[in-house]
Amino acid sequence: GDGSLNFHNLGGARDIYNGSAVSYHDPGADEHRFATLQDLRDATRLLDALENCTTITPFFTPQDVPGALMSLAMYRHALPCTIKPLQGPGVQYAAEARYAVKMAEVIGGPGEVLSLSLSPVSPLNLPEHEAEAIMEIARLGITFGPLPCPTAGTTAPFSIAGALAQQNAEVLIALVLAELVNPGLPIIYCGRLAMMEPRTGISVWGGVELDLASAGTVQIGHRYGLPVNVYGFSTNSHTLDLQNGFERALNAAIPALAGADELSGIGEMEAGVMGSFAQMVADNELAGSIRRLRRGFVADDDSLAVEVIAAVMNGTHNFLGQKHTSRYLRSGEVLLTRLAERGTWEMWDNGGRKGMAERAQAEAERILREHVVPPLDEAQEKELDALMQAAERELVK
Image (tube, rainbow, N blue to C red):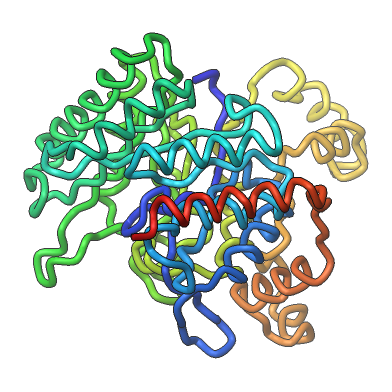
């Protein structure tokens, strides 16, 4: 990577690049339901408005679409809802890759607007149809992200080192096949290693071990000279609660400090099975903090401020009126948050005692009311519909 850090909403516990969540969480009612195509459209439009979400992957896995068309329907219905780079869906079959490329061609060159991922089956299994899909992606010249998602203890060794070694082999299987077909094909090194919860058998996407696994994945991928995508914003929590906050903060900060090129998972909850609009807005603020953390601070003659200290001590004994202070304030030395509580008890009490989750939900609702994405041309919409109809004839048996 070039040292920059990008954020996007890719989830991964269940649907890997097929979007991140099969369920939508309503924090007001504290209930969840199956996600729909409209949820997908709204999520894409919301993510389009969040300044720290760099790229977008179709977020929800809508349950009102036939399974065979799921990936392509997600991509087709997300395309009109953002002007940000829209990463392609997770694919399993060569035909899905071909149709995704044709859809990308409707709005621009596929090489500029599309990347595709595919998940080998852990442990170390690449079914024939997935091998064919990888070769098709390579022939099409599309940026490819091999995306294994082993679970240590069930589909990988329970030791983190052993599970990372297996995950690396699964990435290399797909990478080598793609490069044999098209040498020089752009590759993103991805990994979604999770740990088994010994008491339930459920994959743990919020534990500190994910931080270690993600940091290890970053180091391995960088050793090959590849950009690396890892989690990220993840939790096993079902609500926007304390567990949610500390799990996703650690899961984002550790791989970011390890040098990750992309952090995924904006908006997801319950190990990627569920997501919410309020969570997306909260994660946008967290992403700003992670970006500030990664930037660090400079220690030079100006920032050490020796002359400023001397002037203040010989004068007002107050730094507030110094030009040095206003200059560093404007330069972003202190991150100005929008959702986090920074006032006194009285200010909080007079403001209705709202918590961060309430503020995030209100901001999500405001954005969905006000944010408008420039529409595609009518001809482009018709062409996308025609491609979906052709895909249905070919893929739905």
